[in-house]
Amino acid sequence: MAQLGKLLKEQKYDRQLRQSLALSPRLECSGAISAHFKLRLLGSCHSSASASELWGDHGQEALESAHVCLINATATGTEILKNLVLPGIGSFTIIDGNQVSGEDAGNNFFLQRSSIGKNRAAAAMEFLQELNSDVSGSFVEESPENLLDNDPSFFCRFTVVVATQLP
Image 1 (cartoon, helix red, strand yellow):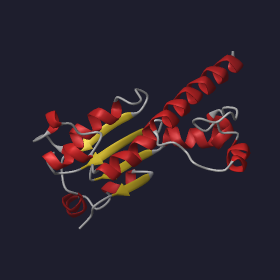
Image 2 (cartoon, one colour):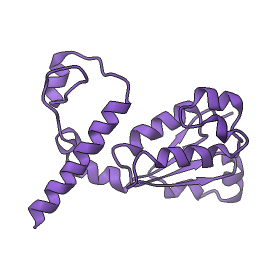
Image 3 (cartoon, rainbow, N blue to C red):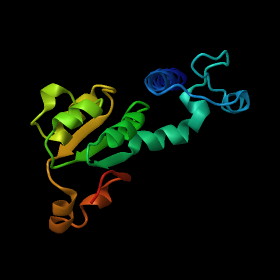
């Protein structure tokens, strides 16, 4: 029974890894690198790697227990978060007090024209959560400066904090 559970978990990781690689830009590197990682690059003939072969069971468990905070749902920030959501981080929180503008909708894949006028954190969270139903997403509609002033220990609860476009 334990073997079946391990097999199912590994199949889930493999599926998430394939989805992550399919949505990421094409990888360009030498055959030596792909052979070292046993990673099937898009358009190459190398064998596929499972997630456990890439970062091991311990690495996947660490990823699944991570709570990532993104400050400001910019195009760069949401792309970083996408690359963590696809392989299966435990949860994420987006902090952004700004509203979606036309410029945001034009340059951020995770914000659409229909999002204009809505809170940027809420809109981005909604689209990012669609990538992986096993990942829990939340948002805080407030500026990071206000959070620090009102609750200095707020950011201590996160495993990683990613900040973009800070003043």
